[in-house]
Length: 117
Image (tube, rainbow, N blue to C red; front, side, top):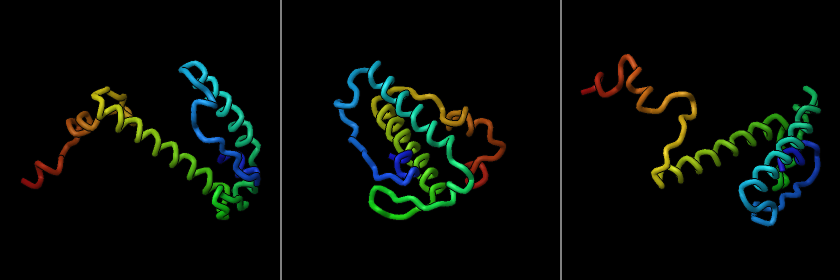
């Protein structure tokens, strides 16, 4: 969707159901194909292209670079959802930035609780 919009095309978003891919192998193959196609489109962007306006699926004009930033924000949102669901199921997840919250706390010189008894 994002790659379509930055080419000044209307979104052809097909949804995200099983009709696109079903089962682990097919889902990974579909994701890899869409990623590869999107990266080919993104690599063609020039500095000038990044400053142009495209339309969101809602028809709202937005600068291309801002729409691409929104894409990464959208991916972060979905990663957060996955981590939340896995946490609710008790499934351990790898730390996002190299350390767990507990590891950051243990390595912190002064933490808030010690400074504000």
